[in-house]
Length: 245
Image (cartoon, rainbow, N blue to C red; front, side):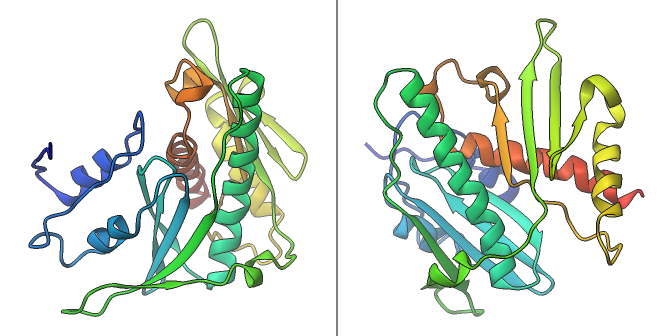
């Protein structure tokens, strides 16, 4: 039986939609609401067992939406340079997460974690018109392009203190060494390696977190949204530190 919920703001709605789910559950949006957003079109296109990435260019930024295999919705506003740069960095991350989740599920003896495909779309939305989802050909985004790898490994200590180790092109930075200055030191190192010296955003290319950091007890509870939400949090801290340098 359909259930209805009311949210005080669009931000509160997005936060709720980013929550993990026990299983895929179709979401319908009242056609008389949210007509100025792409959400109705995204959820009409939603399919179980697939990752679907949508982006909408908004001046110098892009709104990125990812519907994961259980229908949880991730949203992030990122700086936009070109489609190749944007989709390549998300493609690398999503592929790594699929590999990691498949390993964890197999290690637990629970079969395999299977995502049928990763679909990419650009959102075109003119005022007063229905949003149009344009499929993006994946082949151009597989082109080899040099990039700065940033891997995050996180664990929870016995005293409920989170500990992180970050690898920036094999250079190691750890909470145990830098403490509260970890994000500042990582941002400083990355900035020093940029020939232009520009403070454009830092993006994480891989993340490996203990289940207790992600708030789950078993590998079967994991879904892509857990990793995307944490990716967003870490990137925010890195880019806040970068802005202060």
